[in-house]
Amino acid sequence: MSLVNDLGRVAVIYGGSSAEREVSLKSGAAVLAALTRAGVNAIGYDPADGGLVGLEALAPDRVFIALHGRGGEDGTLQGALELLGIPYTGSGVLASALGMDKQRTKLVWQALGLPTPESVMLETDADWSAVVARLGLPLIVKPVHEGSTLGISIVESAEALAAAYHEAARFDARVMAERFIKGDEYTVSLLGDEVLPAIRVEVPGGFYDYEAKYLSDETRYHLPCGLGDAEEAELGELCRRAFEAVGAEGWGRVDVMRDVEGRFWLIEVNTSPGMTDHSLVPQAAAHAGIDFEALVLRILATTLEAKRA
Image 1 (cartoon, rainbow, N blue to C red):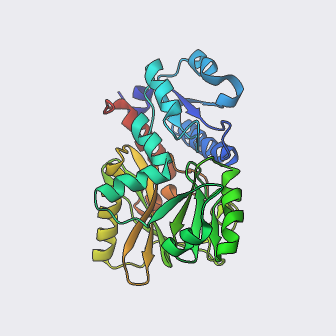
Image 2 (cartoon, rainbow, N blue to C red; image 1 turned 90 degrees about the horizontal axis):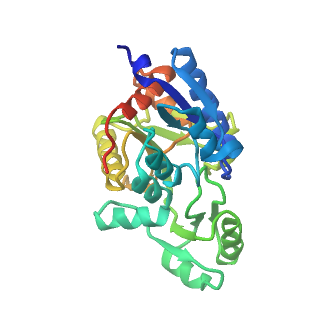
């Protein structure tokens, strides 16, 4: 029996109600179109329309999760699908929840001796001067539970720190400040046991924000990334260890900075990355000879395997 027949009826879940809804709609549409071209019996579903009841009514054999952000990438949907007994793509409940929490992901990495920039949690009444004294300037302020660089600011002065905190707090009750790493930005995608080619991201404005990620045509993605073979192998192994450290599986992406001295620093892990025409996982897969349709099928094929606890 072919893979397409083995997959049965597939629901592609996208949209949702998080701040990343618009990106998720694009990801889901791209995935659904690819599955349809491949002959898979696939249907799109937006949980904002009918919740879990509507999904259950579709009676899917498995689910491709194309939701980003809270409600889809944080273990919530994964837990519901576990209860419903429906296989799904990507990481399980624990890894999804942990990967969505930037601060706790850092704690795990630090405990294992993996390099990640120092950070502190911020509160409304924080001692901004003490934060600057500890992390230096510039520094990064970001929501702990948000993706797509929403609510993130580069802070150049202690006076600007409070405003950056309040901007991030619009997206999340938990906000963190992180030491700024000056250097090149890389991202490494993982597909099953395979580490895909690293991408170096170059942004004319110097900050890979929401516009640079999804809207700008000026952002450059360097493939090959420009590292030597040994350095890229080192980066790939670091990202594999970082991915496995949080219990992630199936597929995902790890974002890294390389400082001016050549050291790599782990920034975050993405357990449900974007699948739009600007997204990084499809670009890395294509460079490895895996077209979009094959990529989607390989991700979906992991649902035929028993998930680890």
